[in-house]
Image (cartoon, rainbow, N blue to C red):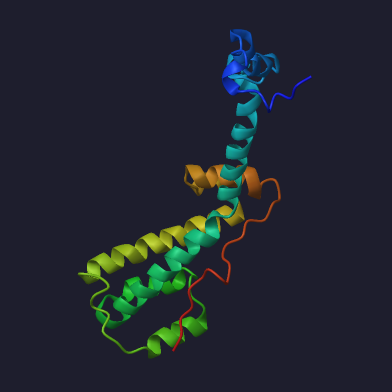
Length: 179
């Protein structure tokens, strides 16, 4: 018997149509092709993953939002302390977003902070929003359900009432006031 490698390729018989589509036939028989796709099996893990990510986002939301509000509070305090109204500065300090050391360090700071806000009224408005955020955080952690916004109510039901403690801030994210 002669080897097929010695034969001229033109003398080999051409493959039949059945031989040409044999790979497709075996693929279709496995049941994993688009023809046999079952959509419910693959969508369940995605929905579960999205729900898990949503719950995780609700749980760790405060440290990120707190860091953002703290950086805004530093800018607002420096502007109001230098150029603005003392009553807004007092309410910002009373909100509890700053420690005593941070207030003392900001009072010692000297600089030109007029670029932070266009007017003292805008800075006072920003201070009011920061104070309202801190009230919301305090209400959430104390479990005052009626005084929360819709997201706060959801977080209260999911975490506070079930006994899962929510983090308020993380030291690695929270901006600090340096001299």
